[in-house]
Image (tube, rainbow, N blue to C red; front, side, top):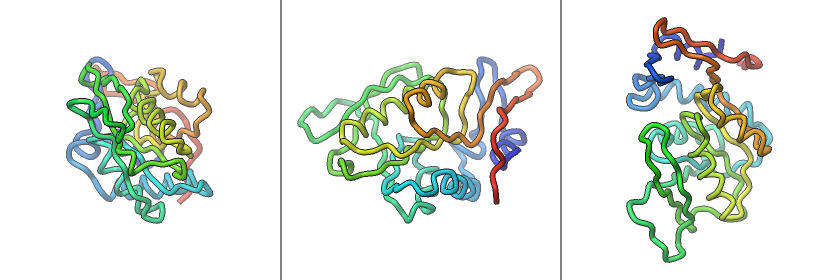
Amino acid sequence: MNFLEERIQKDGVVKEGNVLKVDSFLNHQMDVKLFDEMGKEFARRFEGCPINKILTIEASGIGIASVVALHFDNAPVVFAKKAKSINLDGEMYTAEVESFTHKNTNHVIVSKKFLSKDDHILIIDDFLANGCALQGLIGIANQAGATVEGIGIAIEKGFQQGGRMIRNLGYKLESLAIIDAMDASTGKITFREQQAAHH
């Protein structure tokens, strides 16, 4: 087991409906030392990729992406904002994102000032379930003509179709923990075997 799987075992709480609560260390209260470990591991997995910018989505991706960026020569972090109204003056890239958690659709926007065809992007997010957020971020990168060098996810729900779909599109997707099954009655979490991380 790697460091993130161990932490999920220890502090994650499985709820009915395939919900995993990791708000004590990942997406409400944040363990920044853990994020630093994640950054180290993503730097190892994406070694040799010419990444110059990190792209994420508000809100829970921001903390992780900011610490991860320290391991990529301080590449700036750009986060897609959830837009209340769509600003159609041509200054924004926009995408539609359905939220698995909140059961609604958000428009997300990134200013054209901050993404261009010269950018080599690493997309970072906390969870991957159905892949809607990632598709939105990939769409924004494509509108900018930027290159998506890779996608780094903290926790992937391997029993939902998002991961397979994104990998089938040909992207290098690295998830630090992939959950194949969760049992709310016992609290048992089954992780997919991955190649061990070297430290």
